Image: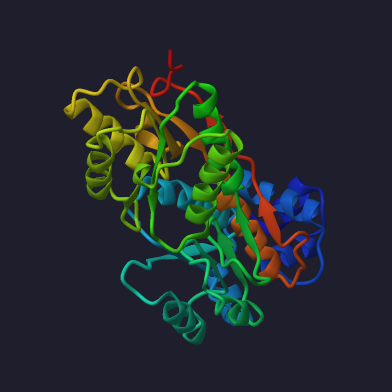
Length: 333
């Protein structure tokens, strides 16, 4: 059995320092915390977390609230959360907010002491209530966040990504650029759509309101098929589509094929997220790739800093996205 002394020797620190890291007590430099956690991971040390939690009146758990457990995008973020939480000696309490009141779920978890902190992936941009909770309980908003407030959050620059995707289609020579958006209340949706609109305006392009169709709140495949058929049935249909997510983009490719419209020769399609199926069938999807695993990992690190009483600098983190050009787009001749 690996002992705490062996961990201390591997990390090059004292046993007391290892104990402080494990029990999240006292001030320990982030660099030292990383050395200790690396040693624990390498040696497979298993501290008695249950006893520690009873002594400190802690649950040893992180609450994660997300909109849809089956969505590949959220699944990839959760993988990052789970990996980092396990590395830091925490387990994850996961729950879907679909059809449920998120504020009540968080309030119940706090009252019942089910978790020491929470990572929220499903906040609407108007959810100002989160500010009051985050003043009393460690909370990090991941990907989606309330527009006004001081609660810590991590995301990408959705506006810049929407702008870049649309500008790319303009540069390919497309004249009728449509969008598959959503009427949900996520800030990311609003930012991506605004980026699309501003890129068209700055490029001197015509905007036809009929060229924007809306999928449901969760960007489901079935609603995407309906929205795409609406766009591609227009007398003057779009010759390119910027899609709010990869699932709607995949729906666009499928519907175009059913209607005898060639992708990308007659219709360029750009998705968003870069989830599993973007390279499962041809044409491979051109898309904006989000660093899903990193978003989850960094969210855990932010949360643990709050749980340990640290101050986040900065409290709002923006990770870089990456544009990936594949087979679903081409230059318009």
